[in-house]
Image 1 (cartoon, one colour):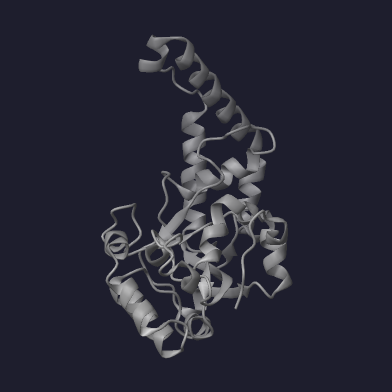
Image 2 (cartoon, rainbow, N blue to C red):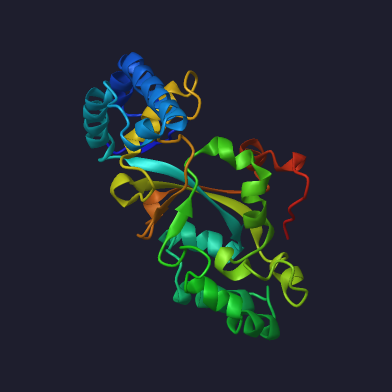
Length: 276
């Protein structure tokens, strides 16, 4: 059975993976301690920086990580996608899944917002003809087009600075970027939809991130109570270049749900987010 695995919930991990990782915690600690020692040497000595000594635990660690990566590969990784959604969009995601960012998706969302009375014809035209929107879809300000981004660390959802903007303005980063303080449109996109967290489960083969193996992230979590700043970091962003089908959508949590407050603690944020 394919499990929905959450990095910060050890009880959700595959049993064989969990047992093997916990059994090898002493090895993991030794490996990371040696990594830190070698890094410190490099800061103190140029030769050690250019020709760092070998980590004596490297081979055993890599063999363990490779073995555990194989175990993970048949399951799904839980991630949180934070945004604002209309009633129509919530239903579409529940029924048909979550689609990667594309010009076609943005234009469809604008059409629907107009049809449902969330935006006027003038407001939709303003967004369609925006240079900011075109630049975002061309990835002038970082990669977004052809992707869906997720946060796999539920503990990070409480960080106002990371997520407030995603909940404040409708349309996703491609639409609201450059318009958040634009007096011509900012008030309108803040009144569309309601803040939502789409909890999805991505097939491991579709997860893209910036590390050699996903198992490295899990193994870092095992030792995070002992090792400060393990490498690879436990906290990271991930994305998929594939649409999520409806069965990969575990839950859509809107701001009216107690779970939304439990996950984000948004009522204690300095700047409030609104729902209409």
